[in-house]
Image (cartoon, rainbow, N blue to C red):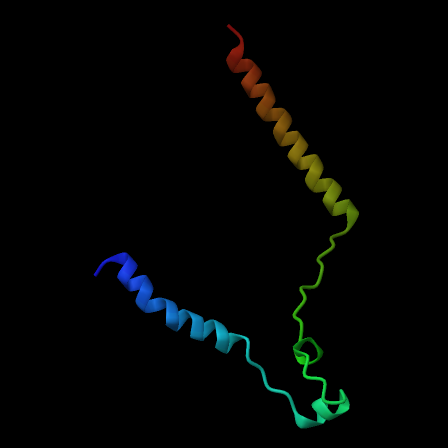
Length: 83
């Protein structure tokens, strides 16, 4: 089978999977509490990643280590370029 034929056979199945992924269940109590508003955003839980903030001192240490590494690399390159 050719690739285009396989893609044509898979496309409807992929569309169905995408549609199923958008479905969710809501209790009648929730619908009544929202005055029968069926807007999906009222019921769908939004998954948000929590921001990871490290301590400024750790960030500064990392930057210092990267700077030292960059300086060593630059020094090695300079040594290679000297005749």
